[in-house]
Image (tube, rainbow, N blue to C red):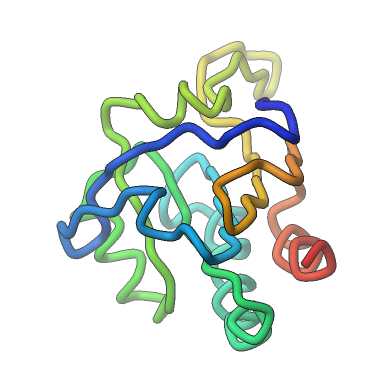
Amino acid sequence: MLETGTKAPEFTLPDQNGEMHSLSDYLGQKVILYFYPRDNTPGCTKQACNFGELMPQFKEKGAVIIGISKDSVASHKKFEEKYGLPFTLLSDTEKLVIQAYDVWKEKKNYGKVSMGVVRTTYLIDEKGMIVKAFGNVKAAENPTQMLGEL
């Protein structure tokens, strides 16, 4: 996980509509940047839907929400449409941003060890600095937690 007080690594990735987004596009706004393992899995769906429900409060506080996983643009589009998600989902199929933000880790699941995205959320300020970093977050509670951090 990256340190608080450091500059957030720049990136450019496609969203669920295939449009490119760079972190620098969001300078002047607070960014909730959350990394999650997979679209349409129970925990990831709960986290995304809870962020979606709280979207008006995040907007009131001047924050945007961006989710990143290694799923494809097409997968993100289906995920967005199925649950009516009102925020940007970025596709990092090459895992370049996932690795830059240090969230690609060894994970244990039922005793089996594999590599994967560790659910991590960063709060990035208006100048592109990491002000909060949370690793191994609880999917259902993370959106409320992040709202409290603003």
